[in-house]
Amino acid sequence: MLANGQAILVSGHGSQIGFLAASNNASLSGSGAVYYTDGTSSSFTLSVGNFWYPAGQDNTQVAAVNFANYPTGSSGHTVYVFSVSVPTDPTKTLQAIVLPRITGTVAGYQAAMHIFAISP
Image (cartoon, rainbow, N blue to C red; front, side, top):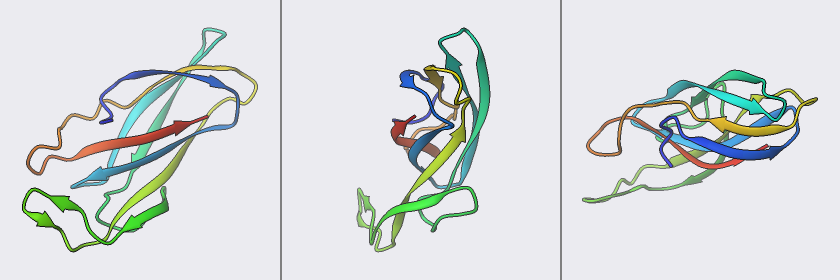
């Protein structure tokens, strides 16, 4: 999905939430929120690298393929997917997260943050 402020139900506890993600056309960052079952919440910043370049400082590369498909054919360039984590309170039970609101679509060359998986 494209990160655009969606609220997603999650459950469990832990010291972090992991995201499998990549941004296109630019590295992107945005603020989100974690909600706990006790009614409290905390904010986080999610920074996701550009799929066109290997992992940066905040991201761990987890996969790569040697091309991206475009309407005009193969890019002929390696693209990447990253693991990124944000801290949570391990003493509390998770209820939901709200993804960053990143404007943009995949149309043209607009940058967008793609979230492929979320795991507490």
